[in-house]
Figure 1 (cartoon, rainbow, N blue to C red):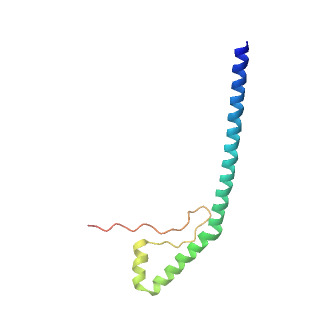
Figure 2 (figure 1 turned 135 degrees about the horizontal axis):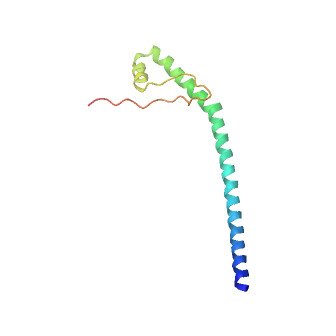
Figure 3 (figure 1 turned 180 degrees about the vertical axis):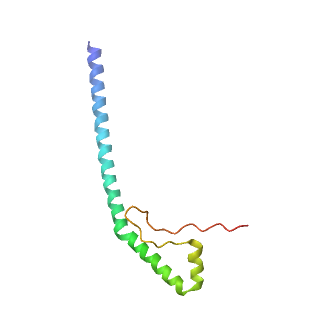
Length: 99
């Protein structure tokens, strides 16, 4: 009977320790999720409009400078205004040249 009581007591203590550990991990994950949400919101409100403005300015610059227009054509930078569901505008990788 004493061995059973000791077994139950150690199992209870072990489960309590695991519950405390899981609760600490859940709190840490919630804090990380909130931080990531803040970072995404900051990107959407600050960085993305600046990048779109930069690409638009580069497109306008390339219209008056033919040397730069070749670079823009090579990298195919798209300056469409994204909708809420569309991914942000970013330059595409250069096309491979045939050998």
